[in-house]
Length: 140
Image (cartoon, rainbow, N blue to C red):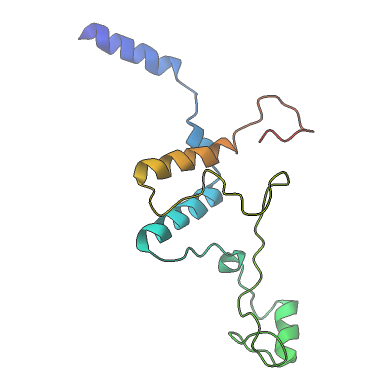
């Protein structure tokens, strides 16, 4: 039993200062991933819009311009007010991939906790430090 304890202590000391791949995932990306996961499990659409955290207030110039033209919050854009009501959300996509390509780390409805963890680690892998130290070339 003492040998096992000594071996475990040695392995623990060797791992000192090492990181888990999940440590590289930025907090905002983690929050976004977890919102997707919770929304899928609860059967609702995730609210991932930039508008959620950066809602325009009355001191914003664009907000005041729209107000001066007769717009009210919740009303659609356009002459008859039948246009979009939600702000346009910019969705990123890879330069080398075509439209409709599903990234492997995207959550699906049938994913269980293990799949969600695996996909979260796949996402974290993209944010790890560049081991090649080549600033001119994107590592991922």
